[in-house]
Image (cartoon, rainbow, N blue to C red; front, side, top):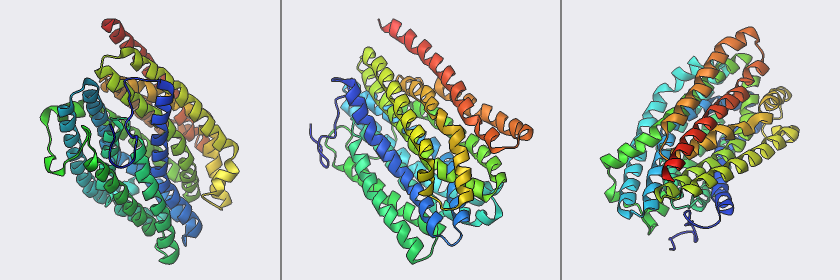
Length: 455
């Protein structure tokens, strides 16, 4: 079958070699996520080199990262439920139900985006003050978050639309959308900051415009699509059964992401006590952390799609094989990337700052995190395999304990005993290891039980 737009976008997930299929599926997702991150990275780089108060502007953009993730991650998690439900219907060969689930998902995206717009505007200053944001950064950070919130409906449309395209194995067109919007974002950042001297406001406006462009392109692809995921704006509705399934799978994943982000907000609030340079240094390193994480997340999404389609078709052996391949590739790629960034830290840090103090703080974070970053694969990939089979609650609860409860305990106890950045940063690798062990054991038990039952 051929689709309108980019050619050869459909992928046969139920048949064919899995190693090359999963890699080719995951690669565009990773590149798409990295381009999304570049919206923020370019913001940091531009204000870090061209803003009138570079350190404060860099910190303002960087400290908003955990807050933005906290705001949107509930609904981004729900989009994972849309992916599973639609892919499962496709695996069963039920085009009518797949189409209904597509229109329900996009209606949820639109409603959630409008809600987030007003929510983001409402909480901007209170939450930044609650996080102990430095006084010289606060007003910049509030302006950035308020402007960014105006684009949240388009962020939701893009994320849900991309999840729908992934159901048919299409990861190329979301990448195409972000290449276009990413180039536009870089140009507008420089234009607003250098020409109009808008600093933080300028990079926020550029990001909103770029998000509008990427979401409109995704909508265009779905409207022109000829398969079961075709979108007809006039048919937008919420089917109760589809919505219930979508929420059953997506809501735990979304709550997990929100709680994960909340724990990072608390860590950020402790980090803010170390001053503007420490916050700016953390913001620099986060760009490379996110790049590494996106490769893990890409294989996680490949695991979800391959598992849900094959599970719907009763191809249980392919479900297990998809898990093994995704886990190995995720560990390999994440390990190589994170250690490359650590080895070339001087070059990579200089991209975002020329301030020696900020660079020193950035390297401290790299030292403590990058050696262990591949451990995230140990809970992301098994959790994705469980969600693809319809088990969303168990990995969510475990991750909430391992990332939020444990990290909150660490944040309130350890910095009092050892008030150093190193002691604060060690919470990450320890929580990754703890969560990975528990989620891995859960996957072995539940999948083994289902496999024996199927046999």
